[in-house]
Length: 211
Image (tube, rainbow, N blue to C red; front, side, top):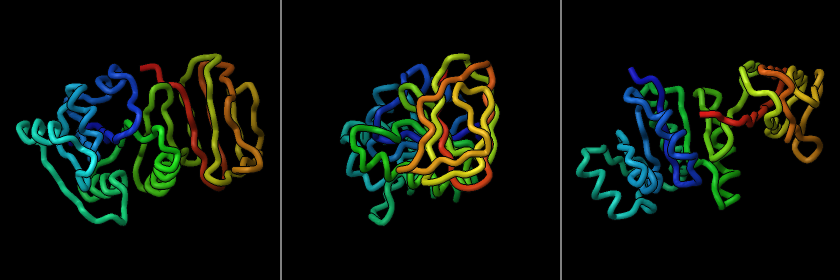
């Protein structure tokens, strides 16, 4: 049984120390197409590469073929490489998904990834890591240890109601957030633990990672 599932996409990656910290010996590592290019440079060997292979470099493809990494080519274009990978994760009974490279310079790709992650967060435990933040959809309630004076952002997707927070400079008390109306970004922690809960909707949380 694998401790977690690492999914590496072709966007902006977190620092190498974060990737190495989360990629343990009992991790199942998946590259989505061009995500294999940076993985090769980082010295991380994936168990499988999934996609239509339009982004992976010839050198990375040759390198991982020599490492006996499984190559799963899926040519259909109705789903993105991210969604193809998440479908593979579900089909193979994997979970506890840590994603690198989900966000990047293409805002259309980034927004689409948020939409896909919203859909699959209902059946998988998914956390996304970029250079600074760990991002995940809250399943009605979360409470975690944190550092005082650090950024916390809450983003409704597209609306979340009955939100109550503890440990934040600008608290919410049974309040609503809605895209285009009111967001909850750039809040600050006021103690070493934070809790957020809500009643209805979808709520995305951004917190700094300290790996």
